[in-house]
Image: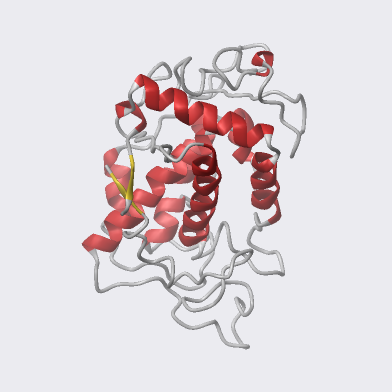
Length: 288
């Protein structure tokens, strides 16, 4: 029977506590840092000469779907009642609303160094030392809304702009494409500065701090953000049922993207599943 991923704002006090405790236990066991290492290892940008799987490529959505499932499996080994909630940033937009509460992920970082000082993931609480991808301190940082140069979270219209595109992705299958659902949701736009960040990317920028860069998994909000994106992929699939993941076939040897992107029936490293096999997960979970 499929389990339910709930809106984080709808979690009961007990569900919040169990989710947080499961995350802390996965961290204590050393499993969480492995997730951080995996994301760093598979974060490849346009212009690199090896396979891109996690970002700037069609497999952005199935890769993170599989990544979420792996984290969820770890959480459920600790507590079988726990699932990954999603954060609907088109509705819960305040820096004091869920998930930024003391009983969930804690709030914004302090002005001096962006260090998160409250909640169970604050360094001072003693349970969440950052060990992978460390650039400055070993503590969680956030800059919600980006105080020095404010930006806004994406809106429902921004999400609809992506959902309304019936084509999953288009050549050259990278961050430069201006059509296709995948990149409209991933959010690599034209121009420079905040105007070029859409949906997924804009949320990472709005949170700031630890959520900037390949080690963004160090902030637990990463999972809630990507669960919401996964839900949008599910919505897109329902709305455009006759459209599928693209490319269906690998780019040919004369294509600049040859060997750089994952086609529908190719394995999605580091796992053995293909995008096609991750297309329908209704037997595993659903969104509530």
